[in-house]
Image: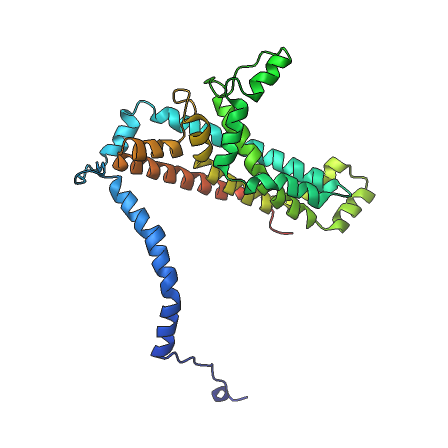
Length: 302
């Protein structure tokens, strides 16, 4: 065929097509600008000011960030609280979710029922769940009554500075492990049966089939759940507000709750914005680290 006979299709876009495309994209662009780009830009600008709602905002440069690192009496404790909560909750959530998913996947009947039962708390508003747990854990509540009835000595989780964080982790686990359990359960269902049957014929034990076949094949789902859980746990607020109000003292104050108290209790919105951007930077660093480490344990070849 002569070369001149081959011609590539040329798409001619008229101005009317461009106008129609712009019209369809405009609502999304306006929404993105109003609810994401503008708030982010305004928050970044406020973090360099001393704005306290009343009066004009004065540009103070990096003074808020310097004050956070050098003069704030509780900032480093709040940061440690947030990292400790994230590390403990993330580890327990992934282990518990995976264990429950494996157990349900091994059942011969009732899989859907158990998945529904354990996933139901995820639908419940976290503030409502926290208030119910407050009735259980509060001094003189159901937990205290139970331990007294059993003649057991147990410190109250809410008012003891050494155990208050454990109450937050307990409530968070009860509320949210169902999401990862469902995610990991779906991944386990997708593992090819012939792989497992061949391994069983070769004499592999149940643990070897799980460790060497199932776990590598569901590693992309594990990675997704780990990243998502880490990001949400760094921003925890609801259960802190409803259950402990950051106390006793500052034992359970997290960065999310510190942003609220600085912004909506003391009205230091400039200072609160600087904490928000520190939290944003930590989440970005944590996510980048997880993305880097995924090359060592996530398998996308299946």
